[in-house]
Every structure is written in C-alpha cells, then in structure tokens.
Image 1 (spheres, helix red, strand yellow):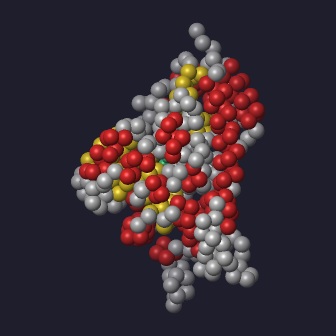
Image 2 (tube, protein in one colour):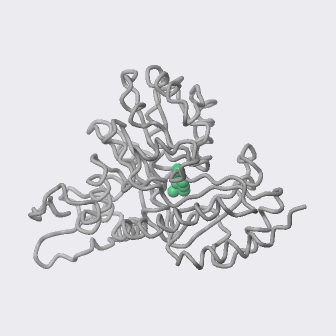
Image 3 (spheres, protein in one colour):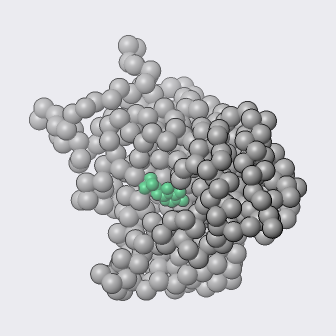
Length: 381
Ligand SMILES: *Cc1c(COP(=O)(O)O)cnc(C)c1O
C-alpha cells in the first residue's frame, strides 16, 4: 500500500477492512502529519501540478478518495454531496437515453431523473427492487441501470449478484447507491457494477455534521469522466467536509458494528410489540428479501422501517414522545433518528404509518426504554 504522498508503507493492499479504514490515506515521510491537514486554499503558486483547487483538488480530498477507492476496488471521486455524486453519474446519460430506476428509491434521485425527462428527453422505467427478471431485461436496453440496495425506505435487497452478471447494453452504466449498505457491508464493484455511489453525509461522516458524497468507478475512463463532471459543475467537496468525512471513516467499522447489533436486537423486539404491525429489517427471516440480504450483505445494516398500529396521527405522536431518539430525518449517524416518511412531500405513496428508524450507537436498553415509553402512548380504539 502506498501512502498519501506516494511513499510505500510496506503494508499489503489486502489489509482487512477495519485496518484499511484506519491506515489508508496517510502520508508516510518522516515529519509528515498523521492526518492530512485541511488546506484552506483555492489557488497555488504557479509552476507545479496544483494550480487551482477546483481543477486539481486538494490533498484532503485525495486522502478521502484513496480510502474509499481502496475499500471498494476502484477509483473514487469525492463530491460536494451525495446528490452531486449521483448527478455526475446521471450526467453521463445521453440525450433521449433510457434510465431504469427502482420503484423504492431515494426521493432526490427520482426528482433528478424526472428533471432530465423534460430537459434531456430521458425515458424512465421504474422497476421493483425485487423484480430480478425486470432488471436483467433493463441491463440489455437501458443506458443507466440505477439500483439502490438496501432501498430507501423499504429496505429491499436486490439480487445484485445476478443483475450485475447480466449482459449489458454497450456503453451503459450500472450504478449502485451503496449508501445504506456502506462499503463494509457491500462492495458493488466486486459484484460487477460499474459505479458505487455514497452519500458520505450518512454513515461515512457518521455525525450528522457534513454534506459530502463520492462515486467509486471500476473503469479508469469512466472515473476520468466523473472527475471531469466535477470540474465542469464545480461540485467539489468542502475542505472541512472532506476532513470530517475522512475522520468519520476511521471509526466506521466500530460505529457500524455497534449500531448494527443494536438494530438487530431492536428489530426482534419490535416484531413482538403489540402496537407495531410490520417490521422491515433485512436481517429478519420474515423480511421479503432476507435471502438476498443473507447472500449479499456482510451485515444487515442499522435502518429499520416499521408501521405502528393506528393512523398517521398516532405515528406522529409516537415520534414526538421520543426523548433519546431524535425526531429527525437522515440516517447513519451516532445518534438514533426516527421520522414518519410519508410526512415528507413526494413520499405520500408510502404507508401513512411507516416509520424509519436509523439506529445509533447508544446503549440498547436505553433505546428500547425510549421506544417502549413512546409506543405506550399510542391508544388504540
Ligand atoms: C442521503 C442520500 C442521498 C443524497 O445524499 P446527500 O448527501 O444528502 O446529497 C442519496 N442516496 C441515498 C440512499 C441517501 O440516503
């Protein structure tokens, strides 16, 4: 493994993920700081390779990209946000191109695709995450095959291994939004995807304190196109954000391990709670895509979706009674958050009482006490 300054570290490239997260993206020369410093500079003295930050990047972005690229087996390009990363991939779709999108899909991505329908003549085909034959068919005809697995918010796991192995239309891109899985639980490029995309605002940052994103591409020409898209649109990460995302990666394995253990235990308990009607967690045997999850994910993640009995008002009241768990959107942070998804515009198609709980690293019994007291306040007729 080479250090961030190109000096050989003497470490093997096949370090375990936990060690790679800690060791990668550091400089190696005597006297170098252990952490790549933030360099708040837009321009540099002329005469060397680095001229202007938007074009050549700054060392802090490169440290982040090195860690992510090594983790997933490709070349990473970091972006200002997850959506900026997604947009750079969608930028590759030709005019009048065909885009295959999951029915259960991050709302921002759906909105981006819809915008391209009018402006660029894209045709959009929505496919159920579980419709493997539908995805295989799309692989042969679509210009962009966009998967999200596990999906948001229903946590459906696609048969990525089968879909990625299907013959693809020449020049097409198969992309996987890997935000929910994290690079620890799933590595789409190894399954045959062309790009893996992350909102680093979620698990990678891990503290709800930044917006950042990344695309990891297997093919050098495609990663060069993505880099170019970033330069053209100027969707560069902030210096502070890249630093914080890198710092977040150092503890990703620990945070995920703890939060995932919590989530598994809470999912089992929620199933048996009299005020809860439907628990969706890939680790549950009752989950519709448990088999695919078992095959493809190293761990089942930290997100649980479930319905409470009653109506939307009961679900809202439940959220408002929470004390330890934050009533907030987003996910993947150290603190647990929960919200009623259908309360957001554009999410009205979801069950009115569907709650999405992102489980954090708090003590399991404190989380359960909070859920129980808040569920206890639901009064059923
Ligand atoms: C949050 C999220 C995004 C968008 O990322 P931002 O950093 O908020 O722009 C995309 N996909 C998924 C699955 C997400 O959860």
